[in-house]
Image (cartoon, rainbow, N blue to C red; front, side, top):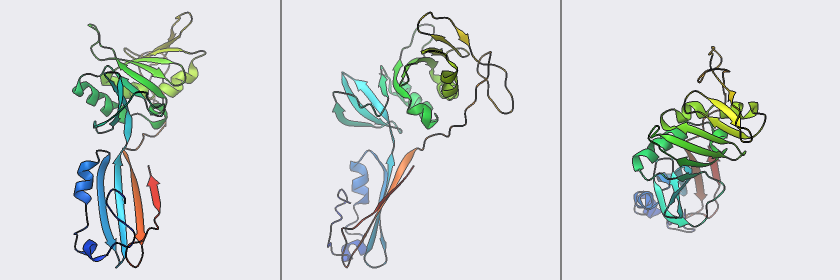
Length: 236
């Protein structure tokens, strides 16, 4: 309401004829917004509906952290220190590679997304799509871009099966080994109607639902002109 310049005791008639509707200009100035709409309800009711792009994480560039949205837009305002609320993306110097990652990242179940602390792009001669992940639970994961979302959805079950903290390698197949002695624990294979398989060994499945692509907020004002009283509802 503040950004759209909707104020208490505004004269209602400019809104009736669209003269005070700044939806287009507000949308262009706010990269976090998917849409911003003002709609009159009755004679003196205004409903402001805002749909936001959700935040994917923070991308590190030249020692500064920038907020990046699910749609790939980067917020220009930088931070010197990252926020613990979102994962950090490092070494993504190519826009196309970063976009590919974000597409895969959106497909992850919310429990997996929130469990990631950092994703590093670490290409090599043998594997130009290699990723190195640091998880909030202390484990590390190696994966590749093309199969990142497909295999990472099994992470909660694989992590639960590990007897101690270590590494889960999803580059070819899927296996894990503890940090201490690097002994490998094979994981995955046979498929059934109730589970999907990755690699060879035990099979893994997950029932976690994917996170939403955005949030929608609604604010409603009422008065003889335009009121200050408003309620905000949020749905994922």
